[in-house]
Image (cartoon, rainbow, N blue to C red; front, side, top):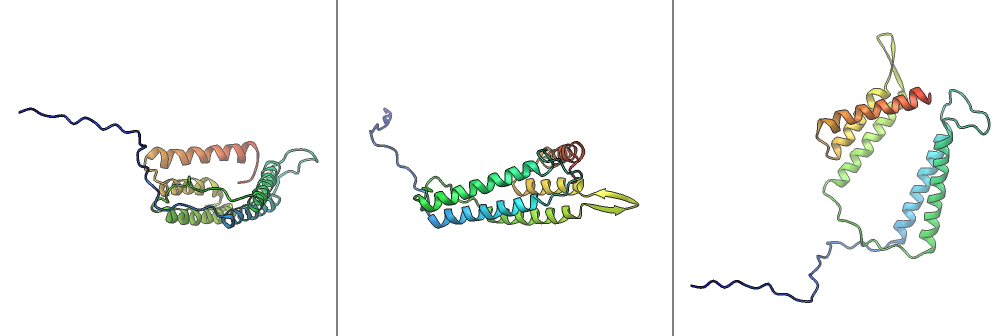
Length: 184
């Protein structure tokens, strides 16, 4: 008995490509809406930045705790306005490079928003008086916030869930609270 090996068939045709389930179509309304949302967010951010409490006002022309956030807010407004002009005056951008939505994406987004709102609300309290001491809440709520975000997005190792939030919080506290003297 002889065995026959099948030879591979060689063709000049390109292999079939798998078409995505849903092809996103260009949308001028979506681009305009995204630009308007970005503009509103950056405008609110800039207004809030201008209300930052300063321990010491800088002399005119000096940098203080409001300087860089203000620059970033104004830059964000300029970029959002530019995107709005582009969205209105040019043809919409192709969106064929978008990937399929991952399962659980909407749930993760909603949990992230809820966690962020809770974090910001607790941060506004700033400090709690307990046992005769003023306890700064930032050093407790920030690692918990980072832990929650990391858990939501799939981190499960102790380094990611414990070490990273603690080190990040310590770095932020030392840099802003101690060195730059910005109240946290």
